[in-house]
Length: 180
Image (cartoon, rainbow, N blue to C red; front, top):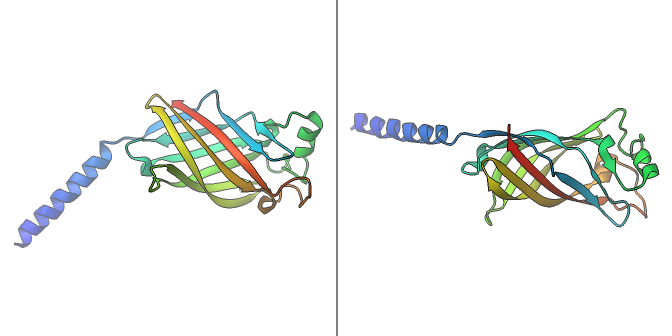
């Protein structure tokens, strides 16, 4: 009886481990056509550059991972003076903290089937955990992730409380990825 029990357990472990191996992750890079925009009454704009590495499997999203990097000097508010001010210590402090980074810690689908990318965002030396929703379209040669989330700039020390600049900034992104 014990031998049959161990045989069943061994068989189950073999099936589970084999199924994990059969769904490989694919390495991707951020492709042209990406956008990450921040929106509020004032200011609004976008970051022109995003780089990163993504390992993704539509069949096994929980094994996926995302690392994204945004140079803060790629900001474009449509106003040259405002772009320069964004680089100062009060705002992004580009000299000390030249990039915004996001590293996923888990990826899963919620009850409605929406991909949720949980990870740590580092901005101006401050780390905060975020769950970023993503709709996904495409195929294994090119996927596009889109979504919206909010960042409280005060939590990251970006600017000071102000009657003219809201604390929470709406972030709208589109992230196409292609095979490396």
